[in-house]
Length: 441
Image 1 (tube, rainbow, N blue to C red):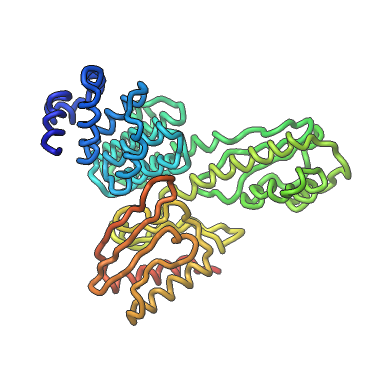
Image 2: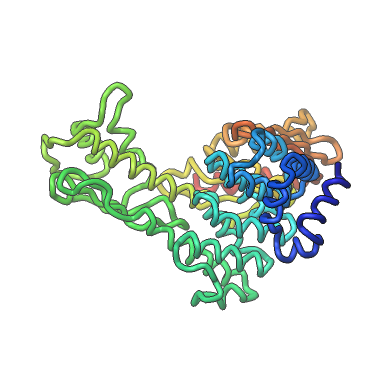
């Protein structure tokens, strides 16, 4: 069917150069579908089998008009695990639009974060602002602003501006000069500034100050562990520290509820006293549903910003991202036993669902694996606890590392591949990562 698809593509969309330069004119496909729907659908599905993004875009256009094949979601889910580049971007984009599942946004982000052709990274940067905003999409666009290719940086900047509602052309931004500079520190300065605009996104008053409210200050995505939060109770601002440890603040709702009991002031008072507030009244009458809604909204806001911080690019890198590497986030000064540690394998993030490690356990697992590798006692690799639960890997003599990344998206199969690594360098990366994580513990 490959030749038949290419002939159909040429007939409907024109020359490959025209499609590359101008994009596929899906209006022509819609017209063809009106004339001969069965033929058009058969050819488009053949195009999907050939991993052609034009076929996916066309099916998405038909779906928007209610004309797509009934099994389109299943078909696209079946090809997503082996999809690469722009084909992966368009497949995830259409699936997100059809299902409403923002988990597919991470599939698009993965292309921007990875090492495929710069043109495909641009396609990912341009697609992300059209999809639901997630912590991963913001963090990926931030990383795109650090890309070696100028055009990837340009379109990533456009994406962040668009999502922030501050325009859509980075060329008109006062910081544009930094984007064109040769020094990567200038790129990072602009990237952090643009991402900082989203720190205000969740700032504000949650709840009713006359009853109970939490006033959140802006988030700092480069130092996420502390955040300003003021509390209002019965029309009075509570006295106590304004800047709190985010995990403790985030768990305020957890500590004030119970599966069998709704939120109550007695529990809330205990939690507020634990945060350092004093002189709280013995009794206050609160609306349980409204109080719970306030606590839930605060938790959601804190979680969103903390997740942006977890996924944003960090300076501390051990290893080579195109083969095997760890990207380590800043230590929490109040709880250094938990830390962001993103595993990179074969040019892509291999811990896409959880990149927070329990430092003592994780570092011990890395050192244990390095010792076993020296003796070749086992070929099992990356069994390092909950963070790598979705990854199965084996390291073979000669340095062939085969892996399977298990999917958590409904109906989407696992992604698998292999990469060649040097055994000695792999051991050094494991040990250095463990040493960095445990320094100061």
